Length: 634
Image (cartoon, rainbow, N blue to C red):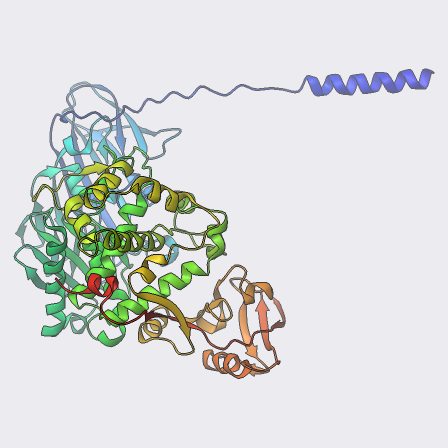
């Protein structure tokens, strides 16, 4: 009895101890950063950048922000950047920040929650805050995109300036000056007065400044495509800038076909800021009056195999209409601090993807056959991806924010930014439905002109919702378009929406030999793509870079990062693996792969006998179909 009472007492004491654990309360969060207001900023910011350090990639910045009163003020580093779709501002590369007023230091404090915000206390009598800082460009790809090389500079104003909180960025006047290496040329949508190596840019507002990046370089050529459209081309070597008359003509056709398609032009002048480089980081980023377009060497000089990279310019140019001028209402923001909501990226990026491939064919930048083969790759990749079983397309519009564009291990199952290519499939289906419902009289061309071809010369933004998209389609062909688009973007478990291609006259088939486009894509990506046979893509030295979820390699236990060292007892090479796949067709002998996974080596057996499989589009029936008409030059 005494022992029982002791045990009871101990249990009660233990319970009491648990009940008396510390229970803190949260510190209240107080947002002291003023919200953006649509009111003019009192004064003009001046920005001076020294961009001459091409060895270490350090941009040295002096900025003066006028002030009209003493007291608390917040300066912001741009965080949410248009075209990136996530909080991509490179705040980690800002260094050496010093602020002064009248020659005396002014201390700053980083906001405890929003690390892109800096609090300062403006001293009495101050007329301006003088800011010194450096932007430290990545010197290796491990640090991010390389923006400075011995021959090239990619200058993005958002990475090397601060702006005052509390104002729409379109209401903040600014004048910028940049000093480039002697003898270099700089190109931008901004007009500049040039004094030797110093470019004095026109006064503008901070929104337009950030939307008007600069590329500068040692080797430069300008190619006029139309009175209002120019390719400002830069390269590592002069030889990469040599373009034939025929090559230039198809680029001129691009400008012509785009204007015929969309009707209006939402720029005064448009500049492709085009870089051909092994050293400068690649890029494809849209702006109202320009785009940053970076490709690897060979664009002009290896024309027969550069066709996959020739979709870049049609895509980014289409964004001047789709994404820049017309933009999802929840995506548009008044400053670069307000979070973006990406729910309509299946229009912004998906329809731009649609028009990019159409325009590459109409212009002749990429042949019709190569475009059909590119479509086949897109259809096949989505048709074999299992991620649609659980994740709807609309949720992939969150992927830039969720994943920050970092690599994934199981992309076919996790899904990535599928709103690009699945968006293309949806708009192809819409095109086929418009043609069917109007007996061939209407198509997506009519939508483009009605939706994007308004307000000629306006390079502001006109926002939209799904209701606006549906209303425009309804005016062309009455139908419950909102219900259709909502179903397509929210459904799970259904097959990929590839029916628009069949309705427009083409079906997906597989052959044992790859198309020229498929081979060019492998060459450009430096891989061996066996997605539709073994379900893997293999990179350098046999390392597996992609494994299809539920595919044959995945079922055999292979993962991204494993390396193939031998096939059926022979040392690995892409050719030997393909030969083994072909030899296994019609036999019962499995493929035996020697796999290195970390520090372990072992055999993996894949019982596959279907031969090599490569996607192509095959014409249905005879005569001209909807896709033939869609891809034809106007």
